[in-house]
Length: 196
Ligand SMILES: C[S@@+](CC[C@H](N)C(=O)[O-])C[C@H]1O[C@@H](n2cnc3c(N)ncnc32)[C@H](O)[C@@H]1O
Image (cartoon, rainbow, N blue to C red; front, side):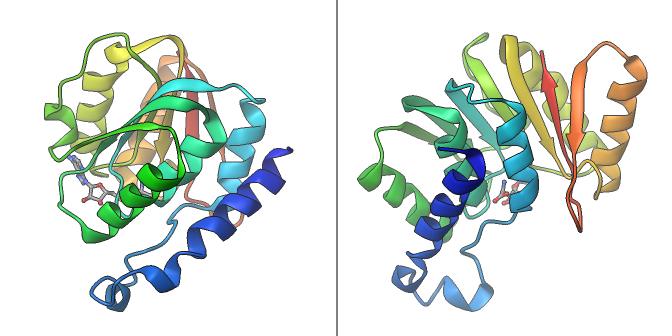
């Protein structure tokens, strides 16, 4: 299926659960996909159907991007590692859906992203979307880059929207040694994709 159609279906499926979400989650609008869908589609098209086996997301919030990227970019029985420091009812809800409707092997670390340990050279897809200060993103980059296998893919979100993420992107661009592209749509957040 072409990426755009697949993403459309996934978004529909995710929001079809909206009425099941408990009212303690609803009032604060805590069930949503908070990325620019058009930018996600561009990333999917760029990666040309490549499928990953170990996806780590730093900063999951409600689990919307975890849901989409897992389905768009991972093999059906891939390891999905969710790292989110806050205990969140909305994320638990999304995890339930993962467990009930997919074969992914899902693991949640409730801890700070740069303090979470995981075996080296396991990760083939990494999404950095936790703390958005310069120090936060830099820490995540320094800690997690070595854990990504050669040829693996690293996505950094908000590289056109948040000062800390913009600064990291500019530094990586200046180093001029990464195979990297930044995608943007209307009202961009910006997502930078680096192939290690
Ligand atoms: C921008 S939101 C993530 C959005 C999510 N990836 C999505 O697109 O649906 C950032 C999340 O990172 C979490 N967070 C912030 N700093 C963190 C850290 N150092 N370690 C782990 N999680 C962190 C916050 O609690 C928040 O839920």
